[in-house]
Amino acid sequence: MPRMPTFFISHGGGPWPWMPDWRAMFHRLEASFVQMVKDLPERPEAILMISGHWEDDSFAVMSSPNPPMVYDYSGFPPETFQIQYKAPGAPSLARRAADLIAAAGLPVRLDPERGYDHGTFVPAYIMYPRADVPLFQVSLRKGYSPHDHFALGRALAPLRDEGVLIIGSGLSYHNLRLFGPGAKVPSEAFDAWLAETMAASPQDRTNRLIHWEQAPYARVCHRKEDHFVPLFVALGAAEDEPAQRVYHDTGLFGGVTASSYRIG
Image (cartoon, rainbow, N blue to C red; front, side, top):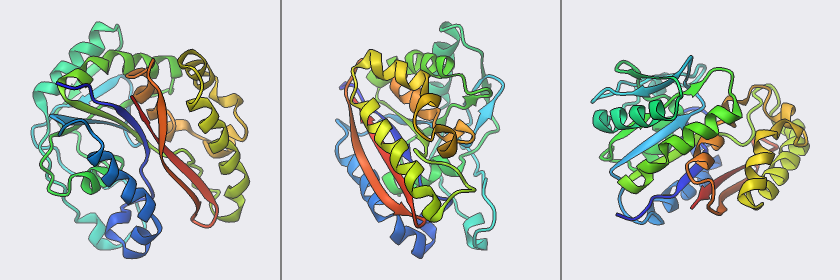
């Protein structure tokens, strides 16, 4: 079985595929998700998503065979609160993931109640619209320790050889109070730093990301780093492998630059 790459994706804004104007704005992002699937070595046994929209005191692992929906957004059209993405869960792989996390000495628990948040069901819907690939999530851990999230990725790495596609789903720029023209300079500068970082040697790359707050405009672009930390997991699971940018957009919401990366 060929080894799966990992990804860090910018998942876009809210339930954008179900809103025509927003879907048009995110047409490059949509094309990147479609291309991701085309470029995989084979169809995944399952997708493991680490979303910026779920955090827990430990690393919680979604274990339901049929996860429900989590509409973790507000102010959107009523029909976006009726969206259904009926992909099956992956209980046996969830237990396998939890065992790997525990073996790494990290706190972990299975969560049989948690459902798909929009950081997960939005990209999954574009990638596999038939909802026919099993899908499960692992949470972030509160506090956002870079070391812990790199360690989580390292723990999960064996799943790549078992047909599991690991995706860190966040946004390379996530300041909900600064969209429009005011986002242009900080998001461009941070994105350029990220591109330089992802092209660095593996050791330098990891070190730069652990100290990510030293990046230009770091705390302007990520007042809270919940949407950046999924990158650490994706990289930890492919730490010694090269990265390539697979999505890049400028001018989103009038000023935001955003990117996604494949590792491996």
